[in-house]
Length: 262
Image (tube, rainbow, N blue to C red; front, side):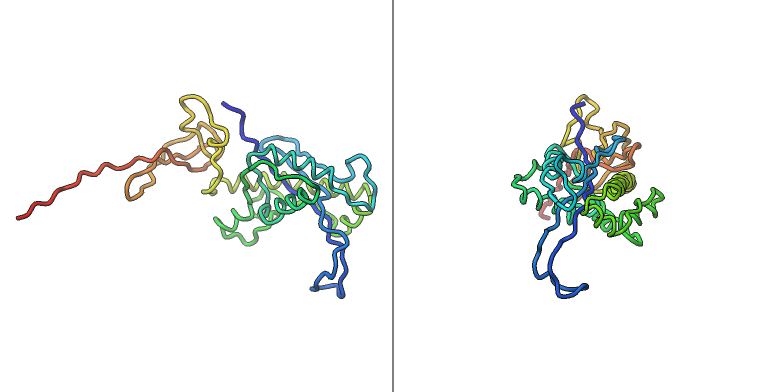
């Protein structure tokens, strides 16, 4: 087997916007004093036991009351640059876009291309759950729930440099990754548009053609055909992850009948 694909589960926590307003609710921000920045991030490679987590307070030179995310963002750039697939809940609308904004704000170019799996989009596309939040999905699927975060008070204390609050933030972030992994694995068999891992990191050997495209297990079984108007695909189901995949396209041979004038 070639090097396995680098599949990263990711979750970021950000600082609030600090700005001027005329009111406290449902109002426009008149001017931004401090934009959204990344204050904490947790990530792990799919299947690994240990979750990596870094917060602003982990870097040399950190001072309470100062939100400088350059060192954290630079490290996260390296994580994404090495990734083949990134999994995040609401990642396409939030985590990845926030990361890109902070990359460009800190003078970094775009990381190398990777495939994105947004479990929020998956939940909305393939299911009708009562609630699509990560916390509610975890509980519905009996996979656990998010850790207590202490509310906005924790964010305020982190901004001020309270190390006890930073510990709560990091624990909360780590639990999000563990829950995200379990939810992803439960939803994975339904992901018809899941990236083909055999194209990202091709297996070697004569059995490679029968590997699951979703998890690369060789434990696949033939389960009929997917039919088109002109041919068919051999269907395979993985007995490890439960996902479906298709073999090469087989074009149907049709014998044309020539009509004769009577």
